[in-house]
Length: 452
Image (cartoon, rainbow, N blue to C red; front, side, top):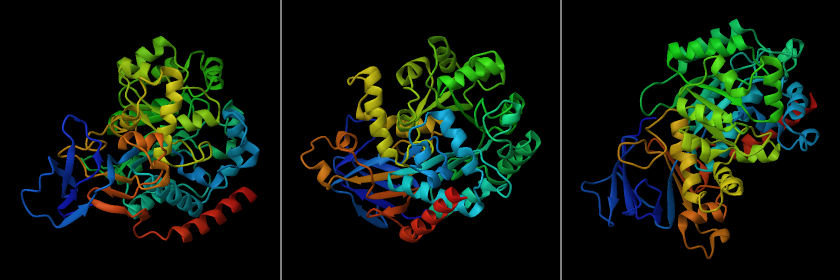
């Protein structure tokens, strides 16, 4: 992701920077990083290779999606599951997803990441746990797409090892042995995981959920993650059904189970995190365990509301995620931030949940959840990952506060997006991607997957 050009981003309407006491009136990008913040409409001290006129544009740090299932773009708005809660929703979809092929996954990943990129997202974490026969190299397929689109990604090697015959939820033909899971996890870390600042691709280990993996694979994944210094991810406390499953199967609640398998640490981030009691919130905070809030999916499946502010007060970092495109059914981080604002206001009130709060969850908070300090904030020395939004659309006409307008008026598409100092979206179009052709192939693959 090398970017040698020195770029002056000139005269933006507004820049969402950590310190708002002095408005930022320009940015200098050099070697893929933010070199300088300019104030008082100052000009650069030395010449630049490119001057980019940002007048009329609102600049955010590139948004960071901390939980997704890219393959699910192939099963959006499918009638049999439109009105189902999580467990029956999963059991109906598992047999369909088991037909996933490498080509279909490639298309699904392209569409998911392209949709995210157009929404101003520059880094995405995907939780891929489906490895049916013929799809052993699923994560390698996703790596190819990440490199093609020029985004950053935390690709998690998910897994399912507890099938129906052993008391789990997934059908037997969708699960793998623990040996196969660990062997492939080791391979992927060795082959793809980048550790330096500015990393484009990172690998994490992500057994799917308490109801789809064995206790042994949770323990072995935790040991491998500690040995290789990579992160851990899973679904936890998403529904009351899951809580009941843990009580019946393991004789303990979800956080007790998490601790019993060696996962209660700051290496871990959890998707959803809804059904915690006060003691569990305190334990998660003390451990520094991250939580990805997925508001749209939680509303779609009627799962509940994540106790975000309680978790933050206890010490747990909070990020945002769109979750799978079969429970959202979109891959749009600006839409997700807007829904986070409204859902969390129902729980905590308007004064505490502001546009600034949810945008920090979508940027700096999400970066913290993924264990990164080099992205998610507009500051000197951080990666030049930027999302630039225009307020020219009819939906913004008459608005006065540019940052609040992005959330309250419903911005959903960025005008320009930069990743590591390189323009990946220009004038609302992804550079180098034939989107109509991609969508035609993707729709065909979606129809084929459902038809069987």
